[in-house]
Image (cartoon, rainbow, N blue to C red; front, side, top):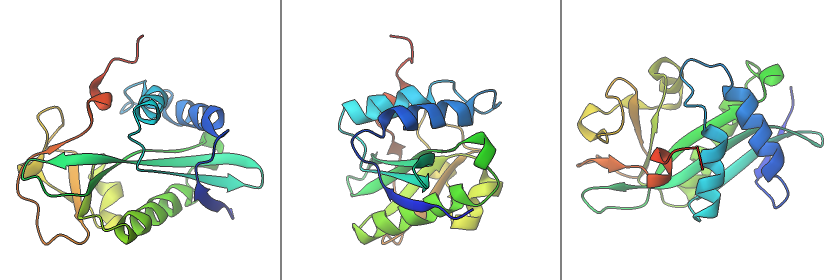
Length: 170
């Protein structure tokens, strides 16, 4: 499938919410509030980068990068996620296109590196490695990963924005 990757625009929010909810619905690894997390990050001005995948005029995927803190004070570091592709378009390379485009963009912005919590078997193809010495207390050592971009190393503990840990129930 040929898709166009572009930055999120005003008016994309409802389609992003639906794609994200649909992509994570029923998944054993889903927290159930990924779509609400995106809205919280947007409301708090914490979307450093939001890219969407368009199939014609239909939004079929989205990826979020938000600032993360490293306890040594170095910056900028980014967190990847969530990344979502509508179920009927999954396994067609759209998520990979979003991830590569996003990593290229944050790298061009001078990112020191990028972290995420996710399936190591999937994310290793993008250069992510497990980072147990850098894992935030709220995250799992088995799934917390780091990709160095302009940094040579990462010394300290990462922290995602508090929006990641707020309840989706309002």
